[in-house]
Each structure stands twice: as C-alpha cells, then as structure tokens.
Length: 396
Ligand code: PMT
Image (tube, rainbow, N blue to C red; front, side, top):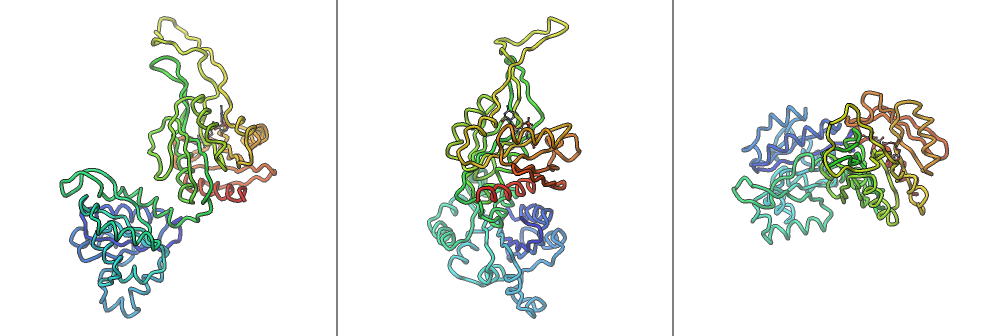
C-alpha cells in the first residue's frame, strides 16, 4: 500500500511524539516517501533532526518559511500528498481543524489537502472524554476524516484510561487501510490460520511449526480492504489484527466446528491454517510415564475441513493453501481438484524465505481453470494482498 506513496506525517506536541519516529520508520521501510510537518509544540518534545534523518526529507514547521513559501509551501505539501497521518494528534489540533482554523503550517496544510487524513489522537483521559473534544471528533468523522481510537492504559499524566497513542504498528495498519482499495466492502471473509494442537495426554500434544503469520496477514489485508473478517485461529503468539473477529480454537475438530458454523454467511473462505491430519486415537487421562524404551501412539485421521467446505459451498469463493516439500505443483493441483477449490496457494516450505514462521513467502497460485502464476519472494502482507486481488476477481 505504501510503495511509492507520498505521506505527510503531522506531529503535534504531546509526550507520545517520540512514537511518531517509529511510525515514520515503518512507513519508510514499506516504501513511502514521507515528509514531516511538526507543530511548534512538537519541537519541544522531539527534534526535527531525527525525523529529517529517518525520512531523508526536510522537516517543515514554519508557515512563513521564506524558502518554502517561494513555492507556496503549504499548498505544494498539501497537493503532493497521497495521505496525511497526524500522530500524535492533540485535542488542540483536532479542535482547530474541526473549527476551520488554519493558523500554522500543519492546520493550513490539512485544510488545503484533498488527500485522506488519518488522526491518531493522544491525550489525557478526561480531555478525551470531554464533550467538546467528542463533538470535534464526531464532526470530523462525519466529514470523512479517519480516526484510530486511542489505546487504554497508564497515561503520562498519571491517570489510567483511554488516551494513549496506539502502538506505531497499529497506526501503520490503520494508515494502510485508509490507502487500501475498498474492493472487499460488503464481503464476509472467513480466514483460518495457525496450527492445530492434537492432545496426547495432559502435558503433550501433536502440532506443527505454523506461526499463524500468513493467515493473520490475510485477515489484516482483508479488513483493510473493507471486508468483514472472521479469523479462526489455532494457538499462536500473534494478536488479532484490528477490526478482525478472532475465534480461537485448539484442535482440528474445534476448527471444523467453527468453520462450518461461519461458512453459510461467508462469501469467501481462505484456509491458511496448517491443520493436523491425524490425532491420537485416545487421549491419556494422566501424564504418560516413560516406563518403556519405546512408545507407540496410534493416530486416527482428522476431518479434512477444506474438503468439507468444498463439498458444502454455495457460491463462496474457496481458497486453500498447500505446504509441500516435494512435487509442489502436482500435489497442489491434486488438492485443488480433490477439495473443489477456486484457487490454491502452493508454497514449497523447503525454500528459505518461504513457509512456516518466516515473514516472507514464495508462492505459486494455481487456478481452477489451469492457470499457474508464480510470485517472487514477497512479505506475507504483500502475498496476502496479491491473493486478495485474485479473490476480488473471483467474487466478481
Ligand atoms: O503460519 P505460518 O508460519 O505463516 O506458515 C504459513 C503456512 C506454511 C502454514 C501456510 O502458508 C500454508 O501453507 N498453510 C497450509 C498448510 C497445510 O497444512 O497444507 P496441507 O497441504 O496440509 O493442507 C491443504 C489445505 O487443506 C490447507 O488449506 C489446509 O488448511 C487444509 N486442511 C488440511 C488438512 C485438514 N485436515 N483440514 C484442512 O482443512
């Protein structure tokens, strides 16, 4: 979403201004060309030099800068932007913009821009709850301005409550959502992610190396593109992406029950989960003791959830994944046909930078009509968006 995009990052005077540095770093890393506008108060908290060094662009703060204003600086900043992000946004800046006041470079530039604007408010909990602030935020929302709600927690002023600037990663995701095409609006996407755990005794289970990263990236990308998303996830260390309904499960049987209950209301299903194919035939009630040199565990087959989805689907777009160590295309295409899928994402998990736990993936997309697309090594976020581009095409 950020590649090649011009982003204006407005930084206001609040203790959370230091978090804007990390936000800037994330956006630059994602390929954005970021210019920073600081209010006079922001400069009391963090130095322009930090932003300038990390953005490789001059930092702007003076409305009457003689050099900038030879090109009418605030207008050229406003016109050049694809997105404005104001983080932290104080009650003061939100009040001024809501009231139509443009008395410094940031407020003037926001007033002049036609780009979408995302506010990340941060303030004392009582200021946040103040009806004047609420009215200002409401009127800006009604005018189409975007907001990410402040987080709950211990505030710098000593109070506990809502008012903390969200983590830079959360603001980054919200900004991505503002930039994303809303081509999945009105769709309900069911995504599965992570491993399943099949219990052996009270202290042991069978599982696999899935971290959930691929499935969570798909859920996050789908919500950014306007979908309602239900994420049925096996145990992972990840937090649910903002806006996603997370349904945590442990075993394949639990995942099956959740998937089948959501399926009738879904318009597309993407099964990135690594489901255990087998589970112990019996679960020992007590911890199994190491009395013998060998232990034999009998396993029985788990239900194939995706195959069942393929059988029961009623117009839903169904996408599966295939994690293979050999004969990638053959195995993936067998699964595509046997499970009656529209698309299967094949990843050769022996390749470095692909498959389990890493942040990137290298995939081939096999379509039901026989087309095969080969994608280069991409971040799992990028793979997710590429995949959703295909889902959008299939939905239409
Ligand atoms: O979670 P990460 O660490 O990010 O790793 C990502 C991933 C490697 C797990 C992901 O990219 C991936 O390939 N997921 C599918 C892994 C897998 O179990 O593949 P499979 O070939 O065993 O299964 C094929 C398809 O059937 C999958 O969509 C799977 O969800 C589904 N399945 C499999 C078995 C089963 N009993 N029920 C199922 O629904």
